[in-house]
Image (cartoon, rainbow, N blue to C red):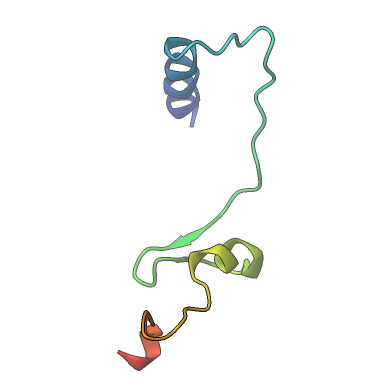
Amino acid sequence: MQDTLERTKHYLTEVGVDLDKTQLTVGQHLRVDGDKESFLDNAAANAPLTREYRAPFVVPKLSEV
């Protein structure tokens, strides 16, 4: 985790973010189900992964494939 933080800080510095003036914040820890490509036990995190589509541009639900 420390390595990821250091890489993130390095990237932000490279793109011009002044880390002395910009507070870094992190959100909640999300557990991922790689097979289902979704988050475990977090409906709010899963909500933006899909939406209601208008016909004829309908993407079938995984259970319908």
